[in-house]
Amino acid sequence: MEKLTIIKVGGKIVEESESLRQLLHDFTKIEGKKLLVHGGGRSATKLAERLGIESHMVNGRRITDKQTLEVVTMVYGGLVNKNIVAGLQAEGVDALGLTGADMNIIRSEKRPVADIDYGYVGDVKEVNAQALVSLISQGIVPILAPLTHDKQGNILNTNADTIAGETAKALASHFEVTLIFCFEKKGVLMNEEDDNSVIARLDRKRFEDLVKEGVIKGGMIPKLENSFKSLSAGVKRVIITNASEIMGDSGTVITESI
Image (cartoon, rainbow, N blue to C red; front, side, top):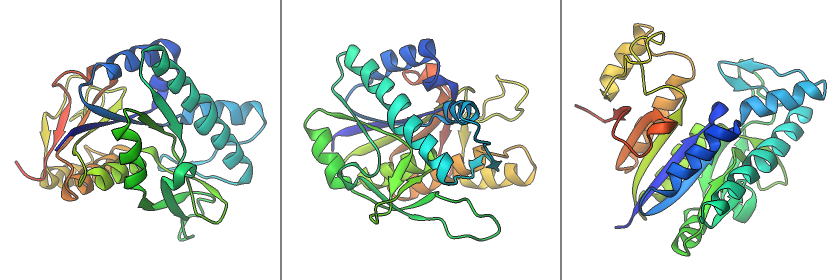
């Protein structure tokens, strides 16, 4: 079975020209088939502010009203996505920028209102693995923006970590998939004040214990939950690491059990 590396990258890494250039340079050196999922929340917040639109976040998730949906569609599907595609073309990589609506790649449903109304936020229901396999087999590198659609004509803002995890799961029966979550830190930390306190290996039981102890919290929890779900669905390897280390062996390796 052919190998496929899925990189999820977000934060300032994709929004600052120097860090993006370095990431894309490293990305091109990954052997075998590749796919990249990106975020872009800081850019969306900045543009919303310039347009006089207030951003509201709950547990790291963006409340998405109609105005905010227009902003994230422009930023994620346009500005950030096409900067990445252009950067990869400059590196000799034949990249194709996609939202979930393109080729019906990712269908989702609007998140139901419970305690919080997240607005136009999508929960992934289906990934069109065959369409992605077709592109990848032609030597095309898909670049997925964190936007999906509901097949009723609506774009929905969707968490990029979730898109990466669901895409990895859908492709696990077609490729030997390695999923790498890249962000500013070196991995999952025992002490968020100490960048060198990286947990080298993390299994489900230890994760649950560290959540109870308050060591792992905030946005890292859904990232790790997506990681464990991916492993359960047949993804071969999941790593959380610094964007500058996607070619190395550092970071936190996520395992079902140790």
